[in-house]
Structure formats: C-alpha cells, structure tokens
Length: 202
Image 1 (cartoon, rainbow, N blue to C red):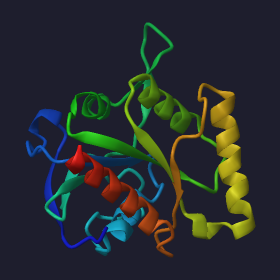
Image 2 (cartoon, rainbow, N blue to C red; image 1 turned 90 degrees about the vertical axis):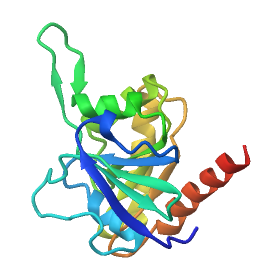
Image 3 (tube, rainbow, N blue to C red; image 1 turned 135 degrees about the vertical axis):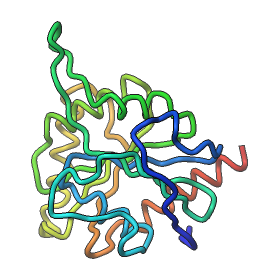
Image 4 (cartoon, rainbow, N blue to C red; image 1 turned 135 degrees about the horizontal axis):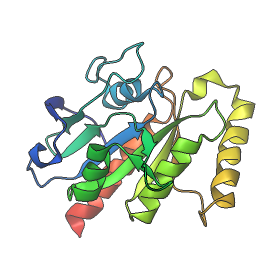
C-alpha cells in the first residue's frame, strides 16, 4: 500500500467526540518514550505529522490522522495504571480503556514495545487486558537499529517465551521496526492495506 495522503483531523480526550466516519481505524499505543511519534512519521513518510519530543508522555490526547482518505491512524497516549483502593486490580487510564472498549471503527491496535528491554510488566498487563476484552492487536518492536542483528531474534524470542509462560497460547502477530532506518515499514503498512482490502471485499 502506498501512502498518498496523511492529514491531521482532530485531538480530544472524549471518545464520544471522535470522528463519526465509518472507516477502518488502527490505533498505536505504548509506554512513554517508546518512539511512537517517530514510528508514525516513518510509516506515513511525513517528518512532522506526529509531534516528537524529548519529554516522555507528550501525547495526552486521542489524535486522529486520516490516511489516503480511506482509514484512520490513531495516536494514543502512553498507558499507565493504578491500583484501585478496594482491590488489587490494575486500571488503565479511563479514556484509553473507553476508546478500546467503545470505538466500533477500531480494527486493530498496535502495541509498541522497546526491543532493547526485557518484557515490562505494564506492557504484558495491557496486552492481557486487550486479550481478555477480545480486542485484536499486534506487537510492534521499536528501535531495532539500537541492537546488533544477532540480538534482535534473541530479544523477540525472550518476549515470546514470557508471553507463552503467562497466559498466551501463541505469540501475537508482531513486527520489528526502526524509525531511523525505516525497518519494518512495508510490513506494517502492507498488513493494514491487506486488512482494508479484505474488509472491502467482505
């Protein structure tokens, strides 16, 4: 799939005010400083479509970008969680859970994780929450250029082992990317393109 156009549409923190267009939506989310804005700019080949910052947590709103006038790329805030006072259950930010729970246009979430680090508890818990709520998602490993090629498979396999050790029967669909080297761009874009094609033909 070729990205012919990419335009910012709106930002807000109220799911009810998100665009009403009945077109496919793909949401990108991850912890702060995982390289989400850089990845979005790389995927769309627009240098400043999503604002990048040295300050973690700059994205605080639901940001919609219309791609090829056919689908939305959604930039979501980094997820955090808190324990409720009455239980040990972890609760993610309300409008993030509302977005994933209520946004009927959502086709797939892309959960970004930094490939350099060991599996992080908050990432694993968020994926588990998505799975429990039957929300389709893929894993996007970022910053692959920061590792020697020989270490990339090792780190991906470590993540796979951890997921299978916990609650997963198989590793979710995943991509290895680098924003600075444009690694994985075609794979992610073509994956979205194929889903859109299948939706049109269904």
